[in-house]
Image (cartoon, rainbow, N blue to C red; front, top):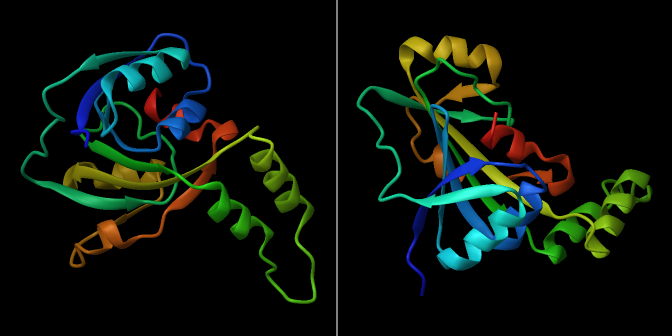
Length: 188
């Protein structure tokens, strides 16, 4: 069993970061200021090799940035970067979805008398040919109350006030590796 490894990521030359992340399986990306960290329970040599192919330099870190007192969690509904100047810690949990789960969801008929959409069939073909991958993600933004309004102007956020179980209970949202949404978020 591998122990979780914390790595600081630095984009040297970005090339298919989402695809390489999908090959690694599951992990947690954290952005704090201009730094991006990856917490993953794979071997460091394997992770370094995969991310080097994506043009990302990896440095071992002792731990992730700590959550300061006064930070409040918010659930984010997209992967739009927060921008600079906000004193926030942005966390995205990522998991590569298995081909069986992704293709079943794409080919499921919404209405019994209608066939699947052309767009869904094309996406499923790309997955079956290994031209693309599906990443499931869940994003939580921790920021002070003073900057929450500014953050909500940039990203669709819902502050969590009472229900702390909502942070981990949300279903994963999907993105395709070819869309490079996680790469744009991680290295904005």
